[in-house]
Image (tube, rainbow, N blue to C red; front, side):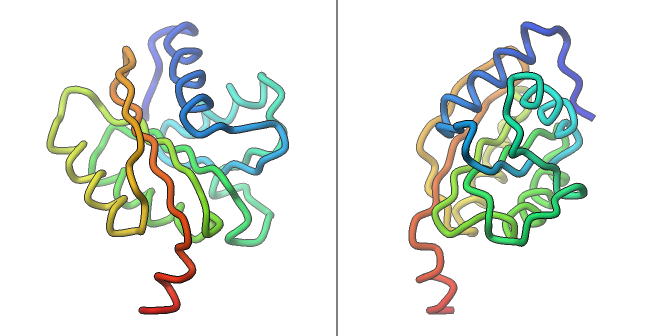
Length: 146
């Protein structure tokens, strides 16, 4: 489980993820990964009421504009991305917290995002690691072609 060392670390990660994805109080966000519950609670404290985890989401699939993911294990990150994908709409944005100490995990996550139709737009270093932001646009066209 991703545990943030302090409230300031959690605030920095949340601020970074909100800024990179452009999350507003009106958008639905889905959260995944072993650090997802901390992200969920932090967002709820900030007034984001349209957030859910994969296990608690009652909203039909393909309805979430934003996906947030936090996990330390690269294998779990890839699995969580696969689980997260069906909940995201065709023009979704994701933010992924990656452990800064493993460059191989960053490469694996980047490759997985590209395979899923996402284009990486930004990466920001935090105390806990690297937050990658990626968007997919027109993903329904890719799905229809396949």
